[in-house]
Image 1 (cartoon, rainbow, N blue to C red):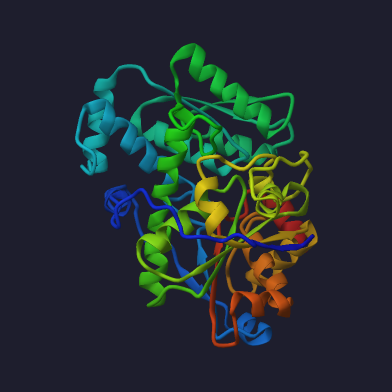
Image 2 (image 1 turned 90 degrees about the horizontal axis):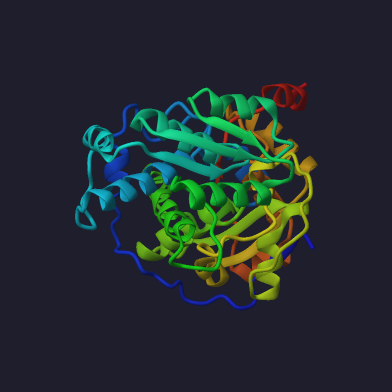
Length: 373
């Protein structure tokens, strides 16, 4: 199956206030600036949309991905709780860094396919914390080196992403390290679930910028799924702010755990399968994201590696440098554009505005050069 419609969409369950402190906090980080919104005029004309634009996250705080938005806000909230400050209080980054020094030795740990781990390592470096990042056995060496460049200790496990997740959880249990997960299991009171839930709120900054830059909310947003944190954040943001945006996911054919879960109506695991879209390679959906996704994902699109690479080439014509996972959203939009039945079912027409996100720049330079070669 390449496109699965959600036959059971429902009202979005909201447990956050309409305004979030994430954007206010992010604006205090050194080097903050909204990432560009790039108009894809020819894509819109060729594929039957009134407008198509891409939020380009290839440079966010000097990093090649949006992920630092979630990790930085979740760490803000973790430190705020340690300091005993009330919920809703936003601590500017300079004050947060000073306060972090008084917490004693702190080690951060997480599992990653690249970008989330680098964001956590970046924050650890700037807060003066130690950091241990677990990565799958087949992660590209360039991505490993980028994480280590922030002073983190990088541990390559013998298996895939799920083993890396388990190793990070074990280190947190055994040593007291702070588990900085962007995916979570069944226990909503567990540290991984709590942190992952706040990570989702951190991504609200991206969508707030998008709407301000575009002058309106999109009718359709195609967003990369992975474990589901960014998707859940989008669903929540647009619901909180009263926008009627339809959210559709894009993920690799071989790691379509979101599509399988939407089809089954419950979290459903898939077998681990290689994809060049390494950041979206997931066997399990995050259970912190599922309550929002089960009602809010309107359709789930699975794209293959060739479609992602074709989207990389297309985006390069607009001056957008996209990695494999970064281009997956556009690949999903192009596939949906060709499916007249899905468009009609979702109520989308030539008058609709569609948006996508370039979630990462080229984190494997050798492969990127080969794709454009």
